[in-house]
Image (cartoon, rainbow, N blue to C red; front, top):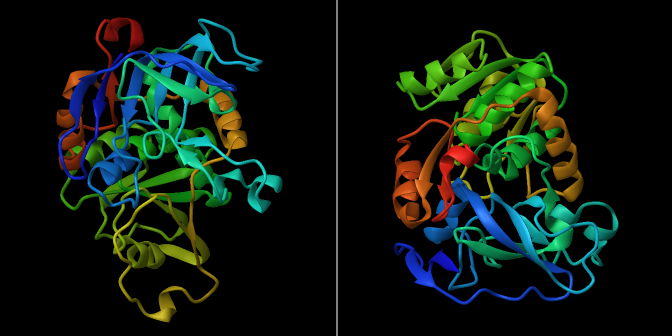
Length: 336
């Protein structure tokens, strides 16, 4: 197998060749056909998330085919297309796992952070945390659903049922969840970097009724706002934008410090919530719903060997939607 490996924090990933690994009990080996590039990967590479398991193969929006089964694996078969998300394993025994909150597990493993991920031609996954994907849709188009979509779905659920929804940071997750929110009959208000007319036009093309800079107030108070941009200063900005009793949901795993703000912004029963990881229930719900919604992901495909360029382009905001890595020998025509 070939892989792009992070050997030192803050350094470029290195192309390596390794022997294929044998799945252990309860595991599967997946031949990777596409892997999304997520902002969380930047947080890992840049050392903003503590204690990654180095050296590590990043990537947690994995699409591929099962090519080997470990002992005891049931419910999956060779050749089946599956997806692997950020939560790669939970302990199953802590108080959170026992009460259907495995996203808060006390001893979790995270794909591409504490266990090897999908910036590779093959990967090993816990079979219990691999979602069957069926045969509808291309591999590249499906990859962003495995994190941008799943975390976006959990964030949307936490935002409540209000009809006026603000999305701060219109990237991979927001462009998916905007489509879900419109399907649900909500009005979407998109907030981008100030002056980013391209992203604002992109948002309007996906049905946003208003698009403007994150330094602007929407034309009417929001029922809820979701922050997909990891910028703490957006928390008080979003609180200003939501109505009394409104919610601000912070969707990122890492965010810059939230500046102090007057209590009056939080008063009148406004709430600030954070999203941590996901549960398998989230995944099954969203992935079964996505085909009915007809989500169209906008993707930019890169060869696996160009992972560093994809990460740099993500950091600089050089594309709309999501970047996806394609391993050697996999054609984007088949996977788009």
